[in-house]
Length: 113
Length: 112
Image 1: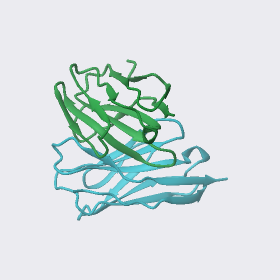
Image 2 (image 1 turned 90 degrees about the vertical axis):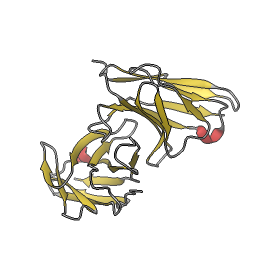
Image 3 (image 1 turned 120 degrees about the horizontal axis):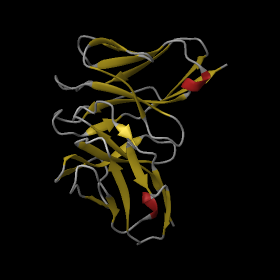
C-alpha cells in the first residue's frame, strides 16, 4: 500500500492563480480531510469528507473547494491564490469518523507570491 | 463544541517520564480522544486513542478520568527522538459529523 499520497510536494503560485492539490489513498478509507499548517502553528481543518459524494467545511474553508467523486481521491482546489494561503497542506484519511488512526500524507508546501 | 487546551511547551530529560495533559471540557458522551505526534516537515502520526480510564500501547499510555474533561498522555522514559509536537484531538460537535479538530499542540523538548 502506498498509503496517502499528495502531489505536488512543492508549488509556487502568483496571487490570483488557481491550482489543485491532489490527494489519493489506497486503503479504502471513507473519511478524508485537508489541513493547513502555517509556520510554528498547529493544524487547521479546511474541508473534510465522510464518503464519496459528501463533503463539508472545516475551520478555515474560505478560498478552497473540494469534491469527492471517488473513495480514493480528494482534491483541494485553490480558486484564486492569495499570500495568506502560503502554508503546508496535509491530506489525511481514516477508516471511521472517530479518526481512529488518521493517516497523513507527506504534505504540499505552497508559496503564494 | 469540544475544544482542547494543552500547554504550549514542555521540557524534559532523557529517561524521564513525561505527562502531557489536554483539557476538553465539552467532550460528548461518545467521543474518543486521540493523540498525535508530529516531527518537523512531516505529517502527524497517530500515537494512541482512548474513551475512558486507561489505554496503553507499546509507546504510550493515555489516562482519562471519570468525568472525561481532560486526558493525560504519558510517555515513559523519553529519549531525544521523542522531541516533537504532540496534539490532542477530539471531535467538534456530534461525533457523527466527522469534524476532527486539532488542539494547539504541545512542543516537547527532550534534553540529554
